[in-house]
Amino acid sequence: MNIILIGFMGSGKTTIGKELAKAKNMEFIDTDDLIESRQGISIKEIFAVHGEPRFREIEAEVLNSLAGIDGHVISVGGGAVMRTGNMSSLKRIGTVVFLDAPLKKIISNLKGNFRPLVGNTIDEDNLKRLLDTRYPTYSQADIIVHTDNLDIKQTVEAILHSLN
Image (cartoon, rainbow, N blue to C red; front, side, top):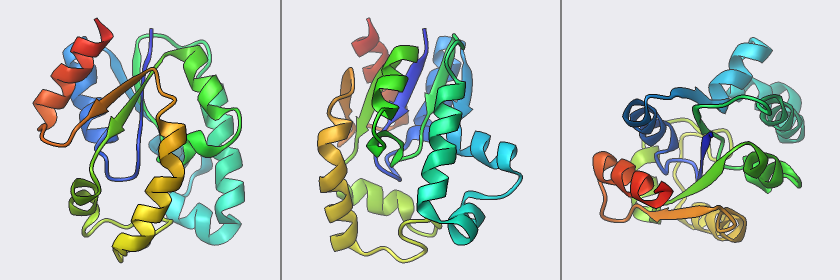
């Protein structure tokens, strides 16, 4: 069984994923890291040179390449599930967990970190619009964990409890 973490940028997928993998004695895969290693360039460069549509194609190819693996915690990019078919692909390879973080927590996590869709500047209104657009798709996850008042350890415990 694989555990797939989805959620908005800055929701803690990578951080939580690494800790969850340790707790479950599983391997951790971050699909963004996988994309960069396979393409030989950063995601920032993929967006700049090839644009978001090409990035989303590459992302879908990477997600599809994960079919057949087992025993992994997989963190996927915030927009990955928005492409038609990606959520179904993810559900075929594991249990999909949506880390539902409040906008305030997301903004705090994003400060000082470049993200291709928002750059280095945090525009709360734009983030809220993007999150509102994605929320219905995120909510199709097998498990939803509201991280509002949870630290990393508590979030991992909530996921483990939900999996049981």
